[in-house]
Length: 319
Length: 319
Image 1 (spheres, each protein chain N blue to C red):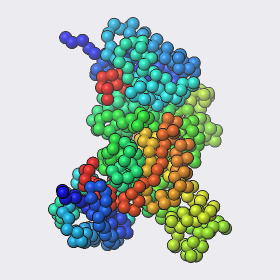
Image 2: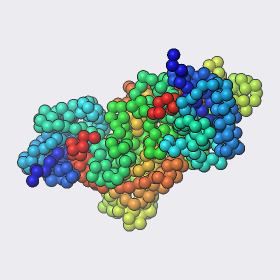
Image 3: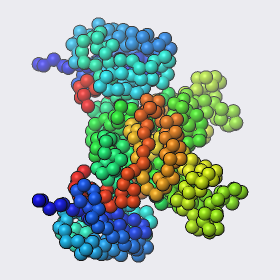
Image 4: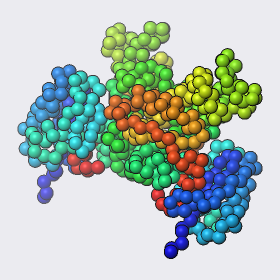
């Protein structure tokens, strides 16, 4: 019987690094999670990545085919560099691919995290039956990946798909990217939570405060979803509004790309049905007429493991 | 000496149809212009197209390789159909390719007019030295064409590149496409002229009225440009504002596509330097950091003949 083939998938996040040993079918055999130490600068982060991979390799004796890394920031695919990832202070441009390759002597593929998630959905998840789709990941940041003819579309320097930084109100709120009115500046989870906190002060009736144990610092998307599920009108309106604003941004992407299948993943996607319906209705009412009937909005399948699986897919598929 | 090869290029507009006999190098040997009779419905329009082509063929005895048509609306390339072109009442979906082919028994290529303009610039114009660019045409409508790896990008059904219908203020002014705050709803020439007329009522000092011979119904982009050239502050601010709004929309396209070369054509592009500088400055201040230094905004080269040349290019290049 031929031995199973494994790859390492690294999901680099601002808070933690999740690393998994993944087989060709996308099954995670082992995984570890380790602090990313983003505030300590790139050296510390790279050292944490190496440490995590070593932990995993020690646990398991398998020989690996390669290492895939999904990272925030702009990635130059051929060079394996990572540029200015948001939430990673003092980063600049780092040759992440080379640094990892030096240590482990296997092929290393570095890809933007949202692109890696899109590749993961394409190969193992909700995107398997589609030729083209737009993947959007809703978390602290709002990221995007574009699949054209079953391949990731990277653009000129690997920066394509910045769907979180599509403006929906060009003279609107400032976004930390330097522009104004970006989708992320409204529905990125930190911005969203801050806005909800402010609005709660004028809303009389909501069980949100109660669900937070009277401590609004504990407010998160899960709690908003729970409140909405329990019939809280304010929480429901927050979710519908989130869907609307995401729909505004996505309608721009659909009108530009003529791709009408949207896959939504990431924490805020946990808002569920209410969110998806709001996005779909907004999109259908706003995209150009010939696209309207083709609009499909579906949830990502890989959930929490999307990052690891997408990153490992880079090794197997080299797409 | 081998005979020169010719194609017919048809530029279908809401007011007139321009048709040219074009050689392989993009030189127009003969051309005619004929009313489009758009208000009389699709039959009348198709009959005008045929009439125009016949006029041209009568003038000139050349055998033609094929006919290319640049048309507004959504085009299904393979079927040669034209769907719901704006400013063509009662249209629906017409098999324009077949109708023309039946008459002239040569290959017929139908393409969205902005895409045809982009192909024209790629092959004969300002896009020749670029692998990737975004073409934007500024007229009554605001159209777009996207070139990736020297080929037109059409999307799933041939509708990609609707850059005029990118929203820059999702809760802004209504656009006739059914959405709100679209770029076209601010800078499409009709909308633009109406806005200028309204604003002129509160502006005390402007030579615009004088340049129109005291008849604001004569106001057009050329007159606004002339006023600005003569130092009229209000006219200048209109042009700068147009560039800003276009820049807002284009920054969305750049962040989604990671393509940073922009070619601008069409009547409103006649606003000149002031417009181009405003677009470029807006773009550089708003696109994601790794794209900023790569932003290039240049005028189209083919000018008035872009439509005919782009359409004829479809025959020679079949791209």
